[in-house]
Length: 490
Image (cartoon, rainbow, N blue to C red; front, top):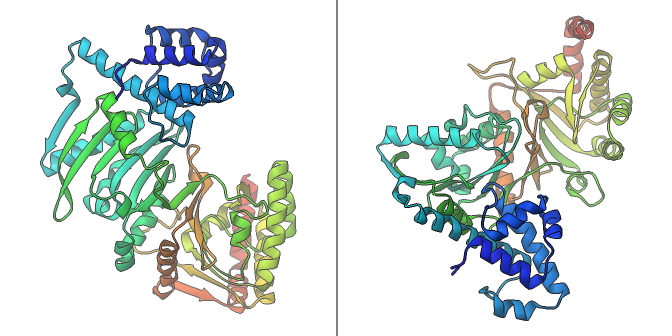
């Protein structure tokens, strides 16, 4: 157990490794005067950045120890367990523990009543209002990327109305990763929860959700905003919050987070959030298209069967790395679209929006088709369906009360073995990731079944190539006038 403060611990590490202050300052990206103050106890690193600082110093100290061949001597000198795989990580955790010890000791020395940092709230309405206010203020006041760790189950929390608490939050300068459990049995038995899962992900595009099997996060009932607060909650039946214990003592919050953190624990994600899928050889996207059977639910424009001139213009607009990816994608799709069985479904709302704006999100590139490019695209789609009768296209009319001018913003792509979801980048206001990869085969199957089930809806209408030709000819004057109006407004 740590019984020494941060300054003494850091000073001992510097002395043992003979590290130079200026080199250590370069490693953490701070002025050397800061490192001097940390080691002499006149100042502590900021609580928001101490984890990164300790991690970088830990790796640096580990490199020096290894280079100097002092591993055995180090373990005899410092109170660390010899059972670790990464010396740098072990040292960083040692520094974090010393930091918490100092915080706790400083509070005791000032005579602070620690009970002020713990509150208990009871009653359904009071607890719900408290949680909503706490989440909104806590997330909104983040000054850097944050993590909301929820050791509970998504569907159960949905029944309490928990996800509505995030509604007023807007993130523009930083990201929030939300880690939560998901019960696959519940999703499989109740498709309404699959619809709700999709709606939540579609609505909160500025957040990065990461899901784990609910069995890996069961029974704790904890909500942790990393470095800010911890809440342990109790639910009644039916699911409603009726009591919670709130902790904001910084050292306790960090201690609880480290004990329950899901990172580096071996617990597998079943939905992962990623910034890009890539188009290099043997990467995810290349492997994804290495088959001949697909199902696509498209909400971000119709990026398939694009005319060659559109690909050429996108390549001119992007970077050299993007140009290579687009060229590979063009070749890949030509091969796929000519020989594969593909089922396209588009919500009418998203289709109308594409017809009006021409916006598509192709691989990792945003592009807006001109009026002429959109007309050429329509013809290319007709020709593609004529050449390959295995291409099927359907639309989903808006349900009662749905805003026809809004559209959905989360597309679904499946090759019947695996799948991913793609956000509409135009409606993401921060640097949130663009993709959700469905890692669990069972979860992919559940979500695929849900989208395929939309074909049984009375709001669904599928069209053959001949029927699309007829529709286009019928509405061609209106479509072209609309495109021309849009063209004249730019």
